[in-house]
Image (cartoon, rainbow, N blue to C red; front, side, top):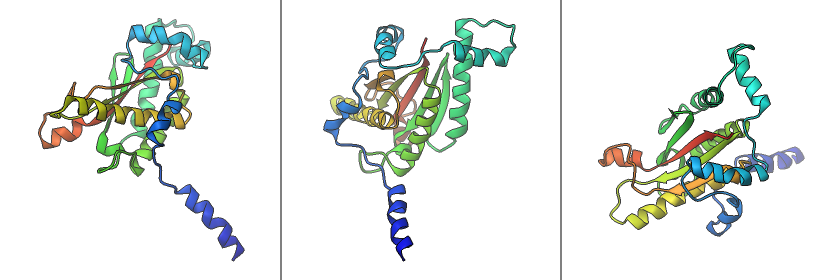
Length: 224
């Protein structure tokens, strides 16, 4: 009987449901993140802060690992190294995220993970769902492995009459995902967080398309 009382609390703790922390605490988790689009200029401006916070860049060890796949005597350009490193990341994400509402795509040397809102969040509440917890935990583990990268987390909504409300909602989704990643040991200095409202739809604005347009996109870029 004693054994039973000892084991039960452990099982309950292991199955605890995830909830986002209080909104007023988000700034603490996201300290060091940039709230702007991730582009070449913003990455260059952020690099000293990122490195100063312990961020990793593509170094000799990564280069050796990448070039070993192409033969010892075949030098690769910086761009080819970026592409090879990100290809490994892409394949790991693709293999791990074969779930409805989730896709992994290439955009040049970048990798983009598209997460439809209903695939990661509660249907009727602004919080991470049990399925989303599992998905984001998987993404966090892979981002920790491929840590020589910057991350843009962008929230999007479907077409809404009130553009201000759309921007607020999309930023809420993006920050919520950013907080989750930060809680799972992803350095906030790697992150760019933006809410783009109803801009850049990827589907029609019909009933089915609206569900697709409500999404979070995680864009991953090599850090050099």
